[in-house]
Length: 123
Ligand code: HEC
Image: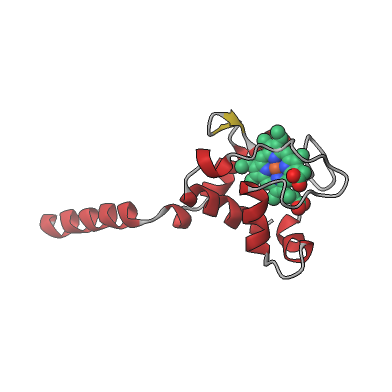
């Protein structure tokens, strides 16, 4: 009996160790909400998730639905990824280019960026 309990506990530990960044629920949300991310002001400093609430950048409420229609031929996922790693590639109407840091691809890991894209796709 004790052995079985121990074996189960061990299996649980292994199972939780095995989960990747993408699987961790809330990973993207936590990154997005971080005040400081990659040594600079985080996403939520400039972007709200409240409709039409403009901080420095556009509100990202509903961005998951808009993203696929922003640039002809670009999927929501591709648009969001490009908007994060190369913000000046497509500048949102009514906003200035050069305001959003363009070095996220250097300061965040691929997994972190993927988690952010996932999170925003769900908005
Ligand atoms: C210093 C302010 C600032 C920070 C920090 C910032 N952004 Fe931005 N972001 C902007 C501005 C301004 C725009 C609009 C101009 C443009 O398109 O580049 C924008 C545009 C975007 C867009 C395009 C939105 C749309 O409606 O098409 C996405 C997506 C985005 N940012 C995601 C992020 C994410 C994710 C982070 C954190 C990793 C982040 N931003 C950090 C200022 C910022």
